[in-house]
Length: 318
Image (cartoon, rainbow, N blue to C red; front, top):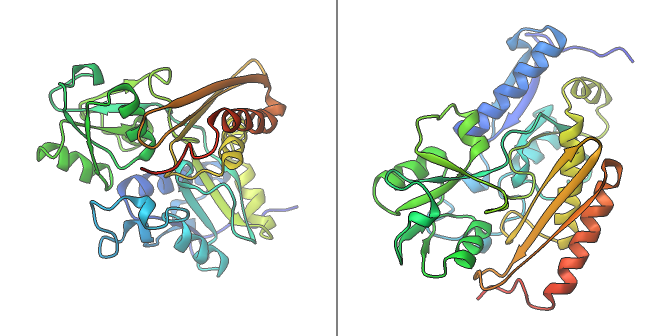
């Protein structure tokens, strides 16, 4: 098949959220496509689409996302634009993505993965162990909340939502003593000046697919599929297949206390997974190792094992 390439007069339209990080990810996608096909940036149009999760008029800053209807909160409107042809591809942070796509859409292209770790962010402290008894921690992530309270039940965890810049401003305003951000986001935004300390995955297992950018397209758009093949990172695809299958089997979302990450070494994939009670009172974890090709099966097996060990009511919100 001969790929029909976009032109400045008929650009390929890239849909994205409007946050600085989302735009950085869309620009990275455009750069990679431009380089792969030796095209000018003007052959790709970045289209900002407002999503429910970014609409401050609809969502109170102190209201947990789980109360609003978290699945698709950051993707629904973008996927609708993709389905109606307003855009040609959609760029997503994979940790925000539901494990099942709407009929007619497919998600199978991933850019090389960034640092998967969380970062401890504080203007005055270097690590979690430096926090005083009863210190206030800001986070909107149910996973991070549960992990923190599991380690430090004395902490006061408050809702702390918004893009990276908003959360840093809240920290500067003294709303909390510290917060947590993804290392990948800080790196992609070039924010080396932020007082952040990476947390090893052995101390805080990250969100499923953290650090990965995914590109969604219409299932019947074979021309775009051919283009996206040129920028797909195969190792990232294998890792996300295992992690997202783990999440799918647990029937989780970005607002369920589930964590997982994986590594590949010489054709062997290692998957680490964790589930926690929402209040942090209990945590269960496990690991699976095997051939890269068995990643999905490992994700299913590990999830089923943790579900059996967890028992009924483990994820109930208190």
